[in-house]
Length: 113
Length: 119
Image 1 (cartoon, rainbow over the protein chains, first blue to last red):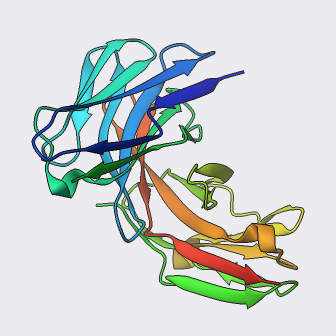
Image 2: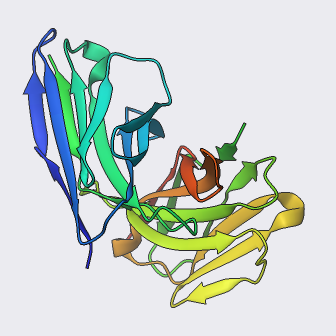
C-alpha cells in the first residue's frame, strides 16, 4: 500500500532563517505531488504541484520554492522566512491519471517568530 | 477560474441530529470531479468521496450521504445521526486539469465548514 511521509511535524523558525520541508511517498511510482498551505481561516491554498521529476509548477508568487529531486520526493524550501510564511503545510500525492483522490501527509505546523 | 464555495463557516449540532454541509462550485470544464475531505483536530486530511461530473446518482455510505446536483452546481454532504467523532472541518474540492493530455489535475478547495457535534 502507498504511504506518504512528511517531516518535521512542527517547526519554529526565526524570521530570515532558511526552510526545508521534506515529503516522500512509498509504494507507488511517478505520482503527482502537491504542496498546500493552510493559514488561519482554514482554507487550503495550493502552492506547488509536480507531475514528474524536475517539473514544478508554482501557483502563487511567494517566498517559497519547491523541488523534486527524485520521483517520490518533494521538497519545500525558503532562503529567508517571513512571518507570513507561518501556517500548516500539507504534502499530498495522487496517481497521475483518472482524477484519483489526493492523499495527504500529516502536515507540518510552521511558526515563524 | 475554478471556485468552490462553502457558505457555512461553522455549524454546531447536538449528537444524533442530522446535518447537511453545503458546497457550491463553479467550473468551465465539462468533465470534472468533486471531492469531500474531513480534517479532524489532529490535522490530517482524510478523503471521504469522489464524484464524477457525469454521475449524478446520490451516494450513501453508512451515516454519510452525498447529493450531487449538476443543475445547481452543488454537491452537498449529509451526516445522519451525528456523533461527537464527526466533529471536524469538512472540505469540498473541485478538480482542474493541468498540463497537456488531460490526465493530471489539481484540486481547488473551499474554505471548509467547522462541524461541532455536542454530546
